Picture 1: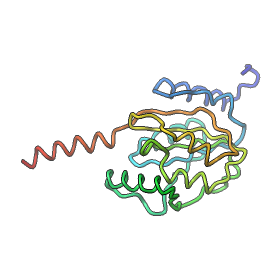
Picture 2: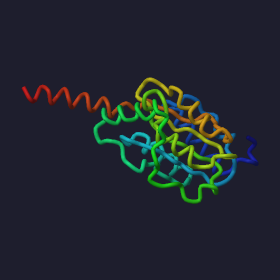
Picture 3: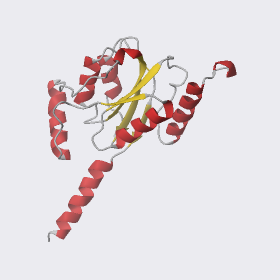
Picture 4: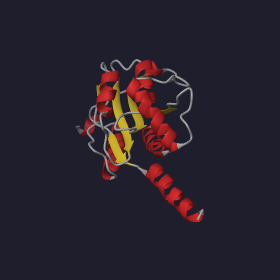
Length: 193
């Protein structure tokens, strides 16, 4: 990147991705590969970790923000959600979405935020990818995980958006929900005695 083609957007994106990298990104090489144009941050979040990452990216880049939600919410209970997601993944089920992105065609770059569920992308992410035309768009994954890495999630993204380009994104370990539930359960067990 030469000084004459450094735009404010590229400077902000480079700064953001470098600061995210310092916080645990796996690889960051998206800044020079993003197409000019309108950006979207579309995310799915159960516990809020991915929501925080998506919100920060959207704010820093001035990108549109869209929450991916299934038409029928996942159970409130964490372990019931784990079981349902496992069943949906095994069956290849793509749950219906609550809404589609308005003006999706206007976006050239889609930052796609999601947590890892069972070593893969949540079923609702497959739904999002299948129901939006990503041909010619650039996808930048924003992934949170519980400590076991990305699994096959990036391959899922590539398979469900074969006509899009995917650049290296951001990932971080964020296992708080399960750890919190386990700690509270242990405390409750002691309290009940």
